[in-house]
Length: 294
Image (cartoon, rainbow, N blue to C red; front, side, top):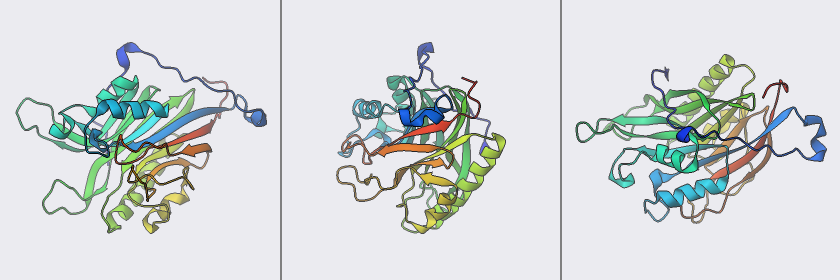
């Protein structure tokens, strides 16, 4: 079930229109010239604004995100007026403002404020984009709540989707944060939900290229992730670990793409302090099915 009643697209900096500078394709790609579009996509678990040292520092985090020079960024562990740990800030909106990007925020939790009249306390995932967000949806997937004393697996929001048009090419970007527990049962259910939702959304926008970004809390060979690889390509296959940031021993953060997307390069920038995870950055080429549109 999708929560479509809510609009999550919040920000477009003071009317600023940002244009992606498209690099010319290499000479070996003459056959694709005029028929493909480059895009840089990233994912980053931002640890609610705190670095690997536990210190909340949005200047440091904004600088790390800016250095990625990505067109689209999926964020996890995002606070919006959550509380003291992030100074009560709208972290999603503040990072978007500092980077000059649009933002779509999809809360996992939306709680009443401690004091009447204050904003709701929210925590979830977000997408930052240099391109206008055409639509945004907060889908429900199976979750085991961290806010309930005796949780049971149940549908809950926090699986965000935005639809973009990248120089005329339709793109669906999904951002997720899968369950962290050692027992893979909830992750297994989340993967099944994810595949079902992404298949349905692609059927509603035929020809759209799809990206799934996020912290999967499992390594690529984990059995519960195996069904994903039937539909998607792990763009970071062979890349270094992403967690913990200071000395990574696991690769649990992913850029994944539909199989019609050409992956050119994926890197894990050596950023050990801005979060407890490292970001992942992928350069791709999107086939342009109608080269006359821009």
